[in-house]
Image (cartoon, rainbow, N blue to C red):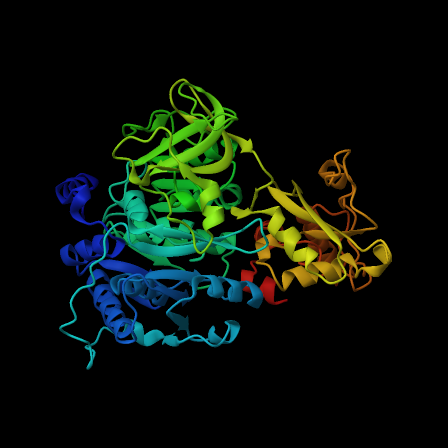
Length: 609
């Protein structure tokens, strides 16, 4: 068994400057440890050597198709070994990957592909039908895992010269204009995130679970944090995992390093704290982290719980706050003892600087409050094909030293406080941007899409507290004055229209139809007044009439649905998603059903029926 001390020595010997690219870090591990498992999946295990050979074969196929340095390659693949091979191969070919979620609405996928203009589309079997046509396609099937010689393997091709400034991937986030923005991330941002990280221990003795979808930038830490450090990457089958399924994968696979978004972290600690017994390091973030749940997790986790903060524009993590239970021997930089009422977002990670700006955009030197701005190697190039949006957010750094990469700051729009000890605390947003179940959402994007409906004259979206914690979106639509609200479809029909154009996490829990949107004295939409008109606990209007539960079992299930959704009542024939439900609510429902009835439903069953 490789000890942590031996791993630390190996990392120190390797040195931070040994590789400047993601695939370069992986190649070092594959050369040093070809026979140890790299991937653990439903089909078995793949070693570092096997993964290196498979990705090299696919990279040669890509190069024979004309893919080269500076190109973008879209990757549509579900969680699994094929997706990992595809991303590695794209990088080895000198290109950057654009992860696509085939579950997104067709219009959104078309917009992402139009903006990225990929040279090629790598598509896993079974997903091609969900994607727009007209692009050159290479099928991504199980043969990419075949560790066999390629008769036309392209031997003699010179390695593609790629360095840390080359693009590694493009991750799309919500955009206030009504169109998603592609954040262009270079290799150096990821290398600074995963090479010898000081906020967490990563080495060959670690086992990391991939939970996040590839199109979500948390997957950057999970996948490359493991493969750049010789760790095992565990890949559960595609699809959403229930809390019980997640717990089984954590325990059965011997997961030692786990990352969960703040909402999922809270649910998992509540439902399956026993599954954390073998976890040494638990990272969480993406939203405000619950201090009580951190205290509960610290009683189970072996070494540390780490609160992480960072926008996609700063390559997943900007700052981290590692915490260890009182009495646990902690590494330097790990705060021993339990958090108090709030969990800080910590200190900047390696090669990252944080600057607080006052209302005039001037740096605040000492402890105090201001807009959090980020500098350093983690910064993205900007927004793909959006120079105006890039210039607005990526601004010259007035504090830049000569060695600061690019001399730029990314203005996050987040308000933060720097304590006297240098630790940062998150205070909220300076604009309307919100986090919905760990995903960043610009209400303006939802408003713009709703306003595109031919019958809608005005649209507004507000974020309100949700049942079970977190936020929910509520949309309001008004019609032209000549027709009034009577000229609009019902709220449920507008919601269904939005569901065909937005990812699931951006679809409002409800759409309220109004004669007109309330305005302030300054003729701006009065969002406080709108919040007062949001649906309460009453059952929403649905296409099916209310059907009372007919048996004791139905009554029990309906009561659980009502509690988890914050409703007064739920009918026996009601649809979870028409009630405003979503994936996280489904997770809570399954956990409560298991707790009260002993029956465990697969998440896929709930989504299918």
